[in-house]
Image (cartoon, rainbow, N blue to C red; front, side, top):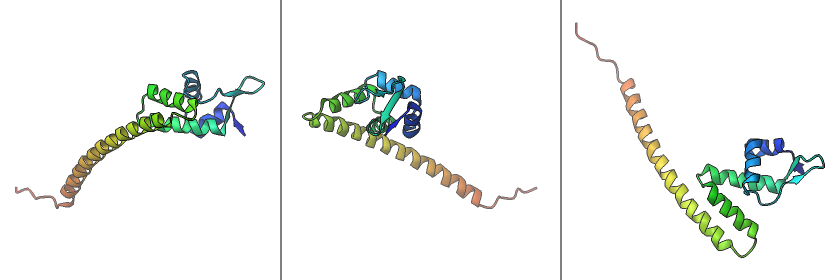
Length: 128
């Protein structure tokens, strides 16, 4: 089964422009097939890979590291240690980012509770 660029965009949550960019920038594993009309035809494997790229980007991996990862995967067996190291390093950054966001959320929750408790108290009467 293959997908048009519009269908691949819908499945991945990306725009057709972004899919073309990923292709031009060498981030896909294989050359995207073309229909006799010249239109791109994405496979399920393409969509799965693009979804992984999207996750890496959404978690802050720079394009140059995504490109390095794609190059390693394209290189085939024998470079799994390099792939693992790249992903482990990125994982540590994601965990640090997550902890920072948790700290920010905790501060927000503290302020929310402060305002809720203030609103729950009866209003003081002013003396005339």
